Length: 132
Image (cartoon, rainbow, N blue to C red):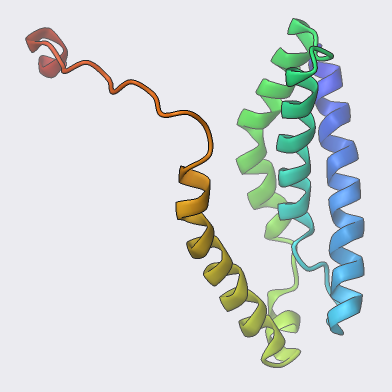
């Protein structure tokens, strides 16, 4: 049911906002630091774990997939309410945190690309597919 997708999104959003507020207080910034990102990661992890354990019925999975597709516009709307000026005025901590996240993300690309078994390459395109 789509309702379960909404419930999963709401729980993840509230949990992510709490983590973001606590992280902001820990680094001395009076703002939510990464709460939306934490919420997105939680939604992906929770839905994947439920799917792997067989505890995500088909209707519920469709609800989660619906909200996963809607998540990017929702994230953009929520992120637009963040007080970016205050975070940057808080000193070099915002720049340091951004550079640390960028460095960690770039360093994890090779690690994440090795996860899972190698897949078969896609077959070459036939002439009909190239014309489309």
